Length: 361
Ligand SMILES: [Zn+2]
Image (tube, rainbow, N blue to C red; front, top):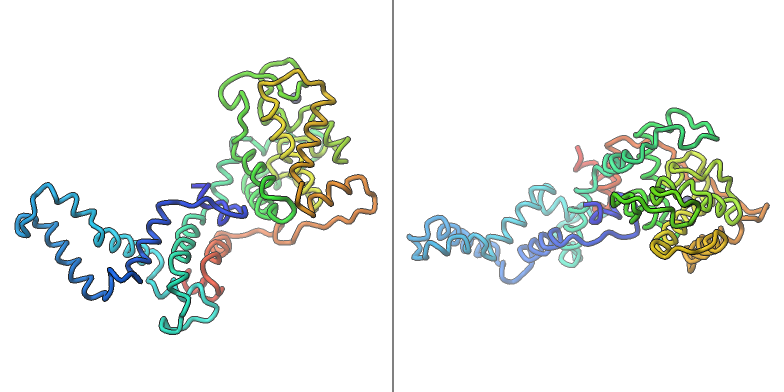
């Protein structure tokens, strides 16, 4: 489900397409606009005849074994699909008007036919994207981020260790990441939080740290890489960030309160990308010296910023004392209640705030 609502729920640049929603949206479009279903009255007469034949096959002269096949007929399938969507969105007219700034009659709406399928798909995606913070909270649960020992050198307020605050903070920063870094970096951070990192421990194995910090088995895991000596060395020497503050799991999961500016967020995200890609590349290879691994991570970080002006600029100015820092936007620190989150999700399909409120109330 997460892949289908990456954009709507988590602020990534795009979501993967869900083929079931796509089929539902196209079936509804066919019912509304295709020649085969017009005029609508004639279509409904034929539909009633098909329903009758399916219910009483012998009366209609149909062999009994065709009954199941008839239930999946073209007309029944598209009518049922369109009805399901219409019930969910409160009627076609509400959906059509929802995408307009000022609602108008259907005859004046010249773009409805062209936008129909896209609007229905967006509505279905937005409908599924309503509980994103709950989902994020359940994903973060496995990392036990409320444990203050993750950051032994910095005191974090108790409120910032609660699952609710962390899920909200992580959701806000994940969404905001689409501005300061390219999509590949945002995707890597998302993958770390979702435990996509193919470490040995994730597959119930006991591999050594791929950065070669120790021969001790069982260190090939995300919980280690965030505080690995090699990773901290990169933070200190290459990115000018204090390892005691940022070299921990809470930073990697985007919940650390010390991530307080756009530049710090960009640097931390690039660091996560560098660790993620280098660890994956070095797994099973081995034999590199510590300095070589640091160079490899540094190069991966530069690759992460390649082609993105802001990320490149931040990376180039890590040691520049006069470099400007931009505070994170105010909305990241604000507390969203459930209704506001739902509003934000529905804004994806409806053009006017008034229309969204009308539908919610
Ligand atoms: Zn290590």
